[in-house]
Length: 461
Image 1 (tube, rainbow, N blue to C red):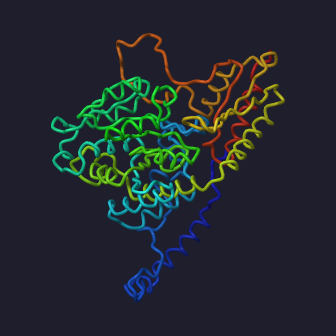
Image 2 (tube, one colour):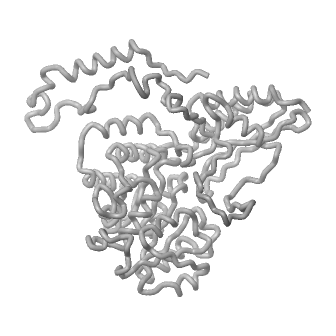
Image 3 (cartoon, rainbow, N blue to C red):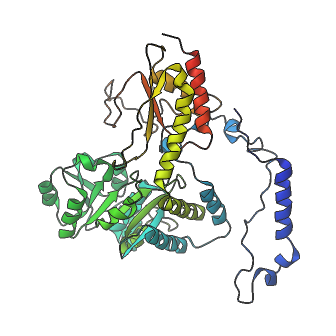
């Protein structure tokens, strides 16, 4: 398996010599050469350090994964955080590099980025955006901002909210999920309800907001528009966690347009921005309060929610590419990759099933491709195929056995066979499948070749 790139030492050094020779010329090393008469930069900005080949230590072999002794993966799982989320496009990586060119006031950059987001995402009048350290971080700073407003004494005491006037957040019982921990860590108290009548009855002078978990909205008895209407009638806030709920891209502006005061999306899923990035879209005053509760400000609950200048620029580019993409063309690309796999394994009696894709699904709107193994021809099951793919080396294909929620602590009181409420596809032992939305160019051929090997070695029925 060839993992090398098209770079070679000669082309690299030639490029380096040309770049550094140009940058270090006398005309570029004095103030007159760097600025025009109007005081504006006359040359393009450059990285603070020249690009250099790594000849010793970490990275010198070109395979940092092998140097650390960890196994890289071909991602056939989808945008799962525990395996790295998504792959950034070259343009996004370039914006990350350009973001490293200068120092900048992070707060000033965030305000400018927020305006860019609001315009790109067609946000309602009076709304703006904020780049956060993921959607979970957006929840922390968003809810902290709602409770503290712009009062420094509250900001520095959070999550001790004992003296705060409003600290209760209403949530439908069916909307409880692992990420409501981010609400609770601010000191807010969750109040569970089930019906519209219970939601209204739960509102009192301590009520701050109603939380809406978008991906679970079909499990609740109160819809998004109903939630917004109830909150507006009682002068409380609404927060919609739509982390994994794009595509379709229209949701970036449809959910704020419904009237939610704050909506968050992950930047590291299908938007394909930096993994530790998120987008928070909300009313300008609320976004300002959220900023007051996050890095680079000190002595506040959101200080660990740090977003670097490089991440901000990269996220903006990823969002721009996402909004402007032709998703029909993207689907055709996925289909063509799946067809390569189908063509390679059909000689074994393995046939493709119809693509599973619901563009209006609530979240994780990702095409899924499946294949059926004819039991009369091969004595191998779908789960066995997936395990063999995961066991592939030097690059694993998928992550069989990796829990989506990551490492778990010890629970002596847990049942021997805990039940999972995760939504899973019906299990058919003769079927295996995968998502192809996060594989890189050429990796579908690696998958096809590995499957040919697996089926060639499988016992015949």
